[in-house]
Image (cartoon, rainbow, N blue to C red):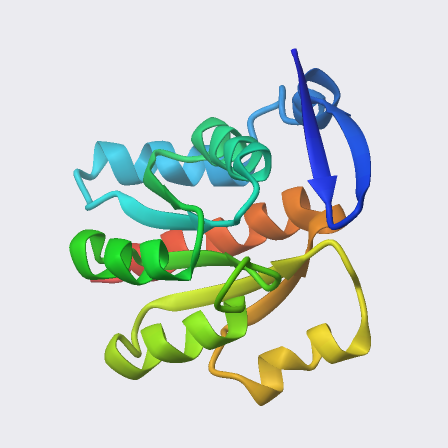
Amino acid sequence: MKYIIACQKRISYVFVEEWFAKDEVESPVIAMSKTQQQKNLPKLKVLVVDDMASMRMLVTEYLRRIANIVIREAGNGDEAISQVKEFSPDIVLMDISLAGMSGVEVTRKIKSDFPNIRIYLFSAYDVDEYRDLKYDSPCDGFIQKSRLKTELQQMIQTELERKDVP
């Protein structure tokens, strides 16, 4: 199966089998997720916000493979704000470059009303300006899309550990 992921004006082809191939062996995140399930702890809730449906699909599919979580998607800032109010996610994965309202603007609006929601900004571009957003904005971290798999695993593991604390 092949998904086309357009990052800004360039298009790259991502073969899902290749992207997921290294996850055949059970990761610590998968093991933690199973333990959470056995303990009947609440599932982690994640909102994926990107104006590119193909990117949302790829991230959502990957998250479903690595953890027992509930996922919702939003394609723009207004949808994200609405989903946060309705869904109350633990984590929001927010693309910086959204059509209309930027991911940074949306993050500020969400954090002003829901300061406990963890928001991670992500982008196809690894530039200082974006990496520094974790210091200059209310976001909880920055993830470059090329390192998304590794960063998602670490982020989900951290959040599962946080939820496991009584």
